[in-house]
Image (cartoon, rainbow, N blue to C red; front, top):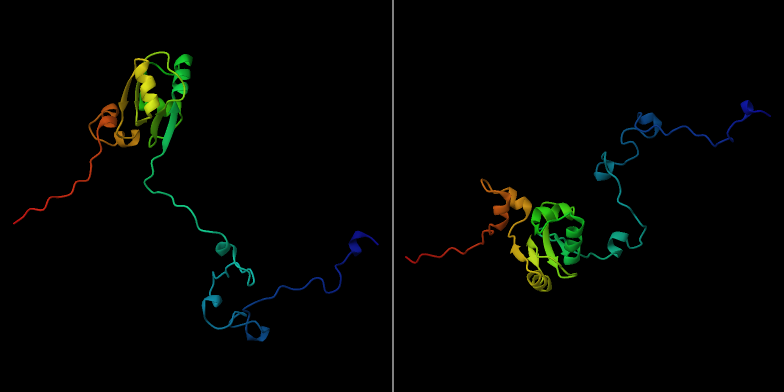
Length: 182
């Protein structure tokens, strides 16, 4: 016996079922799909059937909600700011643009200064939010805080205004129109 004499077992190899090749083949006209309906059309695939068992998409609970207008707030501790100042990455004036580059954040992010850590030198910080403890520590060290109203992305979109000014520009508030009595 050698490799040239090897053959598959009898009945192991069958010809492919040729569908839709005329009425004489037994699988012509409707090609074994029955008459009309969604299942006879091309592109139809049956959804995953688990054979009477409760399907997984019904077994698992629905939960959660993604808020479409959520604010992505990045926390920055005073200890981080002190470290940046020691390493020379930040000066005594820290702006939103500096925070974006130091935290490798996006332009649409907000920054919140948190009070974990101590400051040794006075710092001027511009951020969107500041915790009470951070505010006390910054003022105690002789620094100042400026709250930004907008993100960098929003500030860049304001025409004829530098980004620094755009950050401080308050957002328009919705006001109810007063009805005029006639």
